[in-house]
Length: 220
Image 1: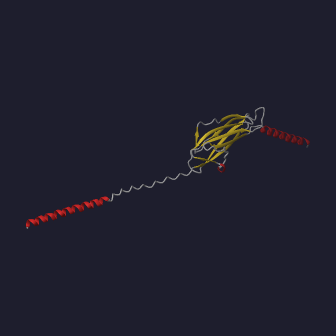
Image 2 (image 1 turned 90 degrees about the horizontal axis):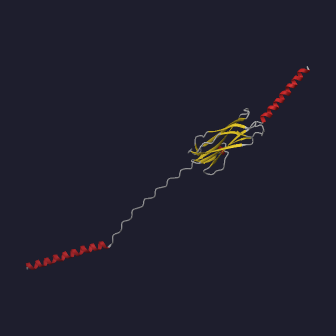
Image 3 (image 1 turned 30 degrees about the vertical axis):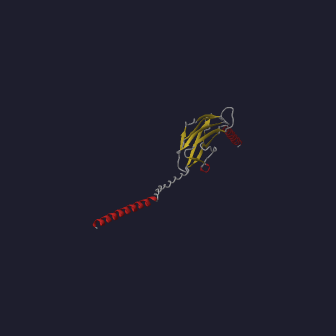
């Protein structure tokens, strides 16, 4: 009865030792993390770690945004390099409503040692013209340990909200200018004209009377 007990105790001790060794080995593996932030370069806004619509950065159509992606290795330091994060690659596809400005950044980050981080940046222009639209831009990374036994991956987002100012009302047309009033004629014109008619009529009457007088004399 003693032999099976001894074998069982040895088996449990062996399993326990293997578990401790496995746990210790895993502790030396790299620990990759990623953070994505956004800044509105046009308005010189603060750099925002906007992860959802409630913390989204408000931007205007046509603004230029700067996206910053930081990949870190927070693993414990090891002299043998087992905790280095190798073959680190970032993927980032622009969603609808954004247009890349300039060249795309290098997304092959290579090896990141423990306690170190690598940052990449790029700029994009807001092309979305719908007020209230939410644009979610996600970046992800992959990597591994130098031994190839600890795959690393993760994602982070940067969210912006589009603001379109209301259009300014069209200016009203000015009221038409009334034409100038005609100049008044001088009052003397009608008096002179009337006087001329009166003089002409008097002359005709005198001439007729003289003619009549001469005729009467001749008949006498």
